[in-house]
Image (cartoon, rainbow, N blue to C red; front, top):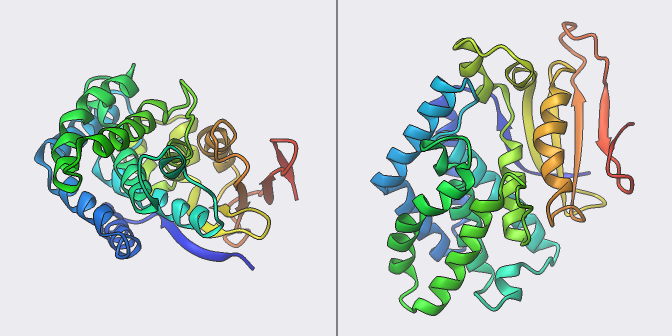
Amino acid sequence: MAEERIVHVASPKAKLYAEADQAIRKRLKAFPRALRAYELLIQDLEARAGWNMANYLTMRKLGYNDHGRVHALLTGAAGVAILDLLAEAGVRLDTVESGAGELEDAYVVVLLSTMLHDLGNQVHRYLHEAFGVALALPILNRILEKIYPDPEPRTALRALILHGIFSHDLEPEPLTLEAGITAVADGTDITKGRGRKAFALGSIDIHSISALAVDEVRILKGDKYPVEIQVLMNNSAGIFQVEETLTKKVLKSPLRPYVTVVAMTDGQSGQDQRIVHRVRLHETEDRFVLD
């Protein structure tokens, strides 16, 4: 039986924020450097303003789903949950492999790259990955200087963080496991709590409709893989969001050997014709198949 690690449930914005904050703090108790980085980041006024303006442009001007502070916290929580499971399975992280740091420092890398990955949207959605690298630099310098007095490891860790920000949308593809975690964590934020506001603002398309069809995303310890991501849908339309947003990021990242995705409808409400009952990312053929 898969062990549950984290659940994204569609709920009001304040509740989502509080749940994500609590989940992050709980997981980082054993990693004081990472917890310090988190506390510095959420108190950083430049980061907060950047998240707010990124959200304004993407939601109000483009009709996209949430790309602000709540999205940053939700993906941050997902990132450290995925990292927990990989570390438990003995997967060697690039932070350690490269000599940049230890496991605790990998948590710093994943947390900061994941929570800052969409910062560039405050300039424009187009090239937001590159803008994000430039805009994250002063924030990262402020935070990392307070945790790593030695400039050599600080610079190495910053490079890994910037790589995660730059490659989170798969163009270019992420090369490190930490960057893969950032990309996949981004892909897990697909519940209807994120899509409802875009829908209410008049963005009625397959993206907002499919987001409304996803009730929960669970990050679990899998039976065959270190990480199993389960997506519970109230309507089969959610499969678009799962395939286009989540599984694409699994398949095009270094996490591909370690993660599987399962999507299913609950079959309880009677509102959905349940065209799809349950699908799984196939272990060998890199595609969804019916169970």
